[in-house]
Structure formats: C-alpha cells, structure tokens
Length: 286
Image (cartoon, rainbow, N blue to C red; front, side):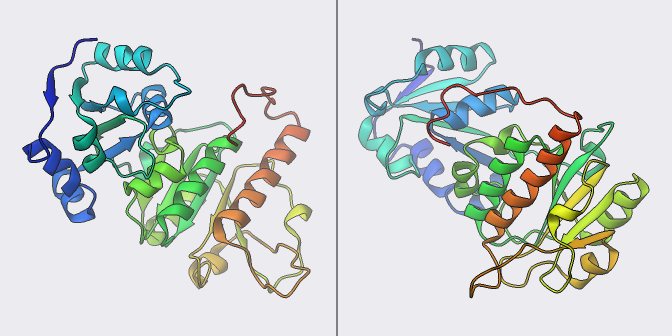
C-alpha cells in the first residue's frame, strides 16, 4: 500500500496538531472532526463524508482484522491522503483506550433545517440542550437504527464533533442527517411542514403507546437534568409519558429516547409504512 508520508517522531508538527484537536477550541478553530477506528471510517465512507487525511498504524490493527487494507484503498481512491504512523506516535495521537490503528480527519459539516431530507411521511427526532457527548452519540446510534429522516439539535450544549460523540454513535454521526437550530426556529419550521410534535412529561395520563405515530411526527426529548423546556411542552401536539413502576422518576435520556423511537418504528412496521430488512449481519456488537 502506498503512503503519502510517514511519521515517526513524537515531536512531528502533525502529531502535535492531532493531539491539540482533542480539545474543542482547537477543533473549532480548525473546523475539523476526528474519526477514530474501523467502524467510524466505514460509516464515513458510507455517508460520503469527506475525510481528507487518514493516519494509519498497521501494528495497532486488532488481531481479528477486518478489511483495513480494502477500506484504505477505497479512501485513497476518493482522494484521502494516507499517512503511516509509528506505534509510539499513534499512541500519542489516538483518543481511544484501545487504538485500532486508524484515525481520519475531515471538516466539520454544519447543516440547517432546510438541508434535512424531505420524506413523504417524515420522522424526525429533536434533541434539546443535550449536555453529555455519550448520550448524544447513543441517541444518534438509536436514530440510525430506526431510520429517522433527520436529527435536529436545538440550542445544543454539546459539541457535535466531540470524539466521544463519534465513538458512542459508532460513526453514525457521518451517515445521519443532523441539523443544528434554535427552538425559536425549529417549532415554526415543523408546524409549517405539517409535522406533529410529540413531547414527554411524567405529569400526563396518556401513555406513549396510546397515540398514533404513523403520520408525520417529530419526537422531542430534552436535557438530562430538566427534560424539555416549557416552550416545547406548550407547543407540542401530543404529550405522553413513559410508565415508571419503581422509585426512579425518569430514565436516562438516551434510554428513554430509544424506547420512544422504537415505538414509532413498531407502529410504522405494523401499518406497512416501512419494511423490516431482516437480520443484519455482524450484529454481535449491538
């Protein structure tokens, strides 16, 4: 395999730059995102995400190798620069505890509401003021699993391009249509599109399984500590609750979101609006 250059020194400027990009201010200044690991690079390829450079350490490939060389050939054919890195240098650059020998760098892509896909029967997820990168990444993974048409981040308190978002999403950050907007802009936009807003609250009688979710819908979920703001609860077309049988009065936001997302999918599968593709190969890590 042909590499454009090789890095061995821990003092190499490129090595130091990647290390600086672990911090949000440096990432934002350079407007870059880091994609570490095999799955992240596979998903970025599938999503036509324009990674520009890929740092490669073959000595760090896991024993149960996937198809790293084939993947790198595909990235090279798309114009990505392949850079070989020594194990010590890669250990300094990588973010994960168990590096897999692959680290891609690409631009941050920011979308607005009007750049979301237009579907005949849209199904959106709105995440308001999510604070923890791990929760946001998990929400993205669940959103991809049920086939949402787009994720809208409202008044976000999380860095969308945090490496923990990439990791928790298993790279679905690169395939899922994500728009960034304010609550002030999003609610009117959804209503203009004829999309009903579904919110959750523990203070209502209606269970989440008792409403029709087969029509155009946007499921809205809120911040970890306080949930949705009052503006979303006032403007929602439907407000439902999850039954809580024990002492806890709420679930982790990513867990609650997954439950609600799968209820939308269940109803749409039952109504014949979408088709179950069947068992997905290599799903042992689900």
